[in-house]
Amino acid sequence: MKKYIFVFILLIMMFIPFQSFGASESVNNFIYIVVNDDLISFHDTYPIVRKGITYVPIGALAEYLNIEIRWDQKSYCVFLTKNDQQIVLDLSSKSLFTKEGQIITDSVFLENNHTMAPYKFIANYFGYQVSYIGEGPIARAKDESLSVGDDELFFMLQNKILKEKERILGEIQKKKEAEAQRKELLLREKGKIVYITFDDGPTIYTEKIIHILDQYHAKATFFMLSGRIKTYKNVVRKLMGEGHAVGLHGVSHNAKKIYKSPNTVVSEMNSCNTSLQEATGTKTNLIRVPYGSAPYMTKPYRKAVEIAGYKMWDWNVDSRDSLGKNISPSVVIRNVKNQVKKQKTPIILLHERSTTVKALPEILKYLKENGYTPIPISKTQQPINFWNRKY
Ligand SMILES: [Zn+2]
Image (cartoon, rainbow, N blue to C red):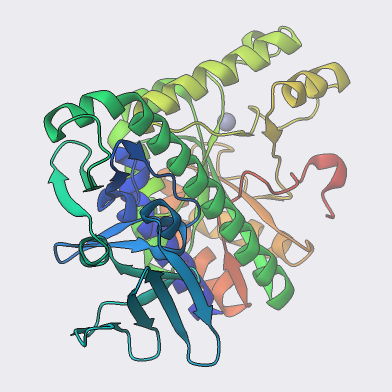
């Protein structure tokens, strides 16, 4: 179980630069491949620069370089041929061999089941010159059929490159979500999962909470208020970066205002989402309405948030940590323990308060000892609500 969480965290870590800047680890090292004047589109697996060498998924590039490509399962080799020239990419020895006897070791590898091979060497071998253009950056293979010089190329392809980048980022995001879903299913099958949720933040306590969660390798979901997201932008970025999920909790937290009509609920969530986007560059579809979905979220209200694309979450374990000023941590801990046992998939309601911070280590310890894995709520997960709390 621990191993899966670790892999899960690693996967999330890999995508952090991508979230904040718009590029994954691989996209940070991403390089655009141009053959003469054409920008080449790659799907699923992308060119990558490692130690100054550009590697490309050769299967996707071969046709643009007019190379014949053949995969031989028996020898575990890829054969690249053009006229009487040939390169063999040997995946078992990770080496490249030319017909003329050149050997480059450590130059061939598999990435998502695609053979990656050194771009420049292969292009050169088959008669192309390769130039690197800092803007993009672009690695361009060219023969005599090009129409613009290197200095004009980026300008000419700028829009295409932007679109390409967006497409790739979208692809990576989708992959990441599918992977998270897969891990979640696995966890569901293998053991007990628990969703720990914190409402009304971010606050001065958020960083402390993240720190405690981290000590127990636990991931949580934070349903946050618009104004506080604006105040604690860095904290929001930090918690997302560490693999916790974010959800919306509206703007006013005032029942008279937010529940005025179905539309006011949607518009509060929308402005909260805008704050989230301004702080982190991403939006979410996860919401929790103030005080939970009962009694205010009657059918027309539920319909409205559903049409707006939101997934509304309640809880089935109420820690009661926000009742009264002097509630002691031990009462909060007892409340959680008593209710967790009764739920198939516990969703624990907590708030960002000093009492909760004090109670949290004991709660996490209890969950761990009882075989629960605390994971973040995913955007695709079917919500659990008061009316289906035994889910
Ligand atoms: Zn609240």
